[in-house]
Image (cartoon, rainbow, N blue to C red; front, side, top):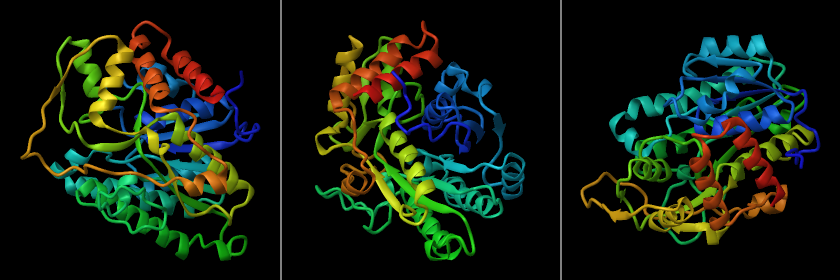
Length: 360
């Protein structure tokens, strides 16, 4: 079965991905490469030698596999000028809440100024037609309510990471109004700029710190008990391929109708997939075939949100996108990658999982 659910749109397109060595970026780069896109990756080094980017070898298959700091504005402009991308997916970021308490300035520099430098590189490069700026569900001013956040809800954030992403959204909104205004499209510019917010994204090849799936797998591989830091925290869990399919569909729509889709979009799971950390860990252990959980909540730990959900009505109705998997299907696919990555060809494993995903 073909993994192309975009009608051959990406074949031959020059696509620049920032953060391609990261978890989501590596999966996006593999999918784009399989669709025939000429992929240019700009990122810092991968976090570990077991990251999906490293094990899959996607860097060797891309048009260009570059190392650069997105905060180096001049360097970003030079890369854009050299490779002349048509579509830009900006995923590079400092993505961790707890780390942001230790390094708040670095978090703001990477997430806010890094995004601005990418937008300035887009502005300076005539070849770019579409920009998809990836932020997070944590960009909203989270009141820990039962209702999901809609795209026009206020931005905010308690911790430095979440607030940096709220600030990011404000910057994107400002650049869209000031330099990529849909009312001036075709006169003063030729760019359709959108921002996208996903839920808690999980999947194979993620080894980041302070994330539930990597924490579980590390413990399972060492035959240790799995410590669960925030067992009752509720999150919108979704497989990495869910939001990526949304970002790629959105970019196609932006290309075809530039002024209709240049706004903010939520790509979260259905409400029944919104679960506690404990439930997700339990489901992973069941699919992995072994493991024991332990409640290790610390009342004195730094603040992390206990409840967060997204409203995805807009993406469903205006884009025709919807999640393909429920929690059980998602966790089966996640466990499958981690059970097989040491023995299988990881690139082919990823392609197989993308094929399974699009067939649902």
